[in-house]
Image (cartoon, rainbow, N blue to C red; front, side, top):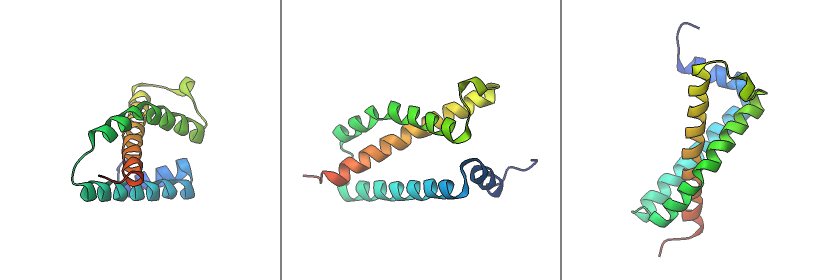
Length: 115
């Protein structure tokens, strides 16, 4: 693999997760992102109380993302081979944490309308 292109990344992720699961995750990410943008535009301000509660969900999201990747790829901590594996694992954890925070904030804002 000499060139790292978008098509190459999509092919790798489809192979790793399976075509259906990968595109379902992409669709879920798009829906949550659009809902988050809708909430921000609708409320015109960030609710710091909801933001704090969303931050409390970040460690859960980080652990859940790492466990999810380990389950999908049939690997575990014993299979980490080098520094790049640790970097990728940390990246997965960070993305899981941020995704959980955005999801929790969005759900809170959609369930409880602003005053």
